[in-house]
Length: 234
Ligand SMILES: CC(C)(COP(=O)(O)OP(=O)(O)OC[C@H]1O[C@@H](n2cnc3c(N)ncnc32)[C@H](O)[C@@H]1OP(=O)(O)O)[C@@H](O)C(=O)NCCC(=O)NCCS
Image 1 (cartoon, helix red, strand yellow):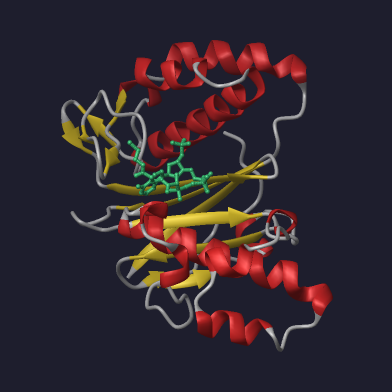
Image 2 (spheres, helix red, strand yellow):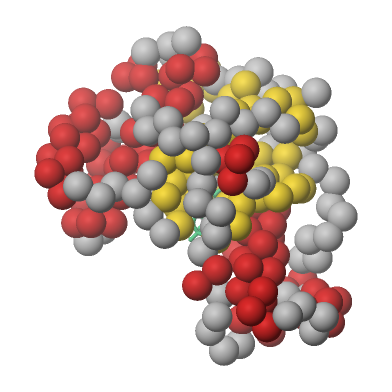
């Protein structure tokens, strides 16, 4: 049964660390990743680099390979895959061959969640997502995001618990849509996320995330709970 490694990286708070992140990124990341960061506003660029560094270090640790020897091999449903593609489904290659690791990353409220499945058989698909309940309170969220059945179920939820319930549904939807690879190209209001095989919520004890953030993981095969949790900021 596939085993998930789960890591939460706390918010990048100290502005003094930005220079260190940039320096590490220039030493370890691929040019396509550095170019993506450069196109973002400075704070978002540093958060992007910090997440990519943590993801690469986790992949290297799990594979017992030097982080600098991994090459990004992302897959985008539109642009395809290869060393020039730095967006879409995460992946790496080593000496030209794809590594046997399924990966997923999500950022919210300054936190980054990383989930990995080691020795993933070819075709194993993984998706993980975190969501901040404060981001789900806008008018129209239910119509945009939820199926009619999910909207009906929310009518039974106490008003003060609605943000958490919405965030839980949204995290499940994005985890599922990252697992399929479609992302939001598929309308989330068409994806019912109760009782889907391989999709489950991740609790704070398993992730190390603050309890108010919702988190979920979807795996295209049986999944066993085994988060190392905590804030391994690699
Ligand atoms: C996947 C998606 C739902 C995540 O959005 P989000 O909630 O804003 O962001 P999160 O922080 O939770 O996740 C971002 C991560 O999702 C992953 N991701 C992006 N697209 C993905 C896909 N198609 N399949 C699986 N994972 C994907 C990446 O690891 C990304 O991290 P990065 O910023 O380091 O590249 C959204 O990016 C999406 O719908 N993308 C697909 C749209 C598309 O195909 N566009 C074509 C581009 S050419």
